[in-house]
Amino acid sequence: MSIQTPVRKQRHVCYKTREVDIYAPIEETLMKEHGLTYSDLMKKGVRHLWNQRQTHKDLLL
Image (cartoon, rainbow, N blue to C red; front, side, top):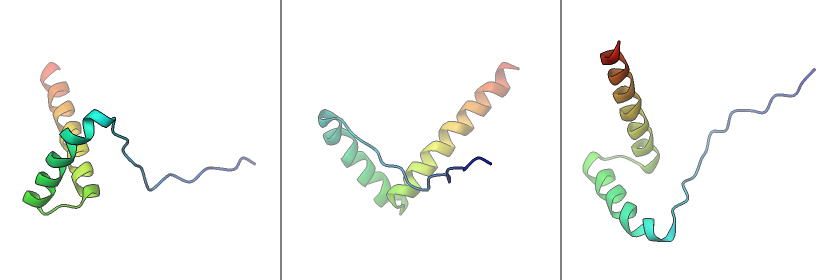
């Protein structure tokens, strides 16, 4: 019988020192404009990229 590790429910993002000044204001602006939490912003971004990928894949077929 093997022990299964539960799926992680949390992740974090590590920015390089020079990236903080770039991404922090962008994230804050997007969160305010769309009324999202940081977590919601990340999920929305992942969904958007996934949908773009799927659409591009469909166009190639």
